[in-house]
Length: 141
Image 1 (tube, helix red, strand yellow):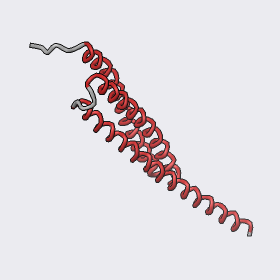
Image 2 (cartoon, rainbow, N blue to C red):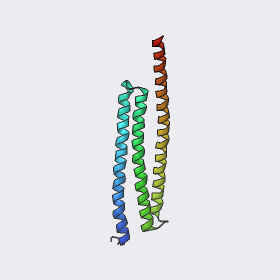
Image 3 (cartoon, one colour):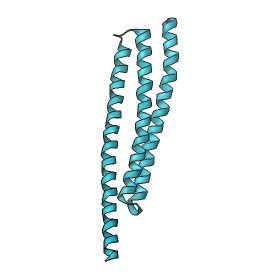
Image 4 (cartoon, rainbow, N blue to C red):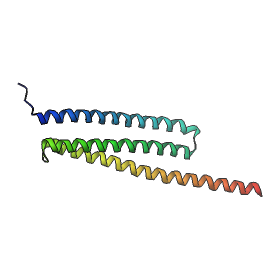
């Protein structure tokens, strides 16, 4: 026999289903973005400069960070709803708290990777400028 659900549980499930589908869409977009980055990096392997590769990677990482931020926001909404309907100590709340921490960790890793890639790109551009100025000096001599 099916378990009867309270009106609050039905409301929570309806709200949560919408947020879950949003999370799935964001996850699919993240997967697509990562695949596009791999393709672009493979294409640049033969013809692109190091700064082109880093610029492409940085652009992709920034997009991934934006999407991950959306996932964190949606999971925060789900957590707030779960606390409202189930209470602070429910298993659903604990599960969502772990999920939120995992997503925040992924977001921080992306942030770290963005910083690392930005620094590498700045260094690569600096090396190119140094090379260009050296070549100009040699040409003028």
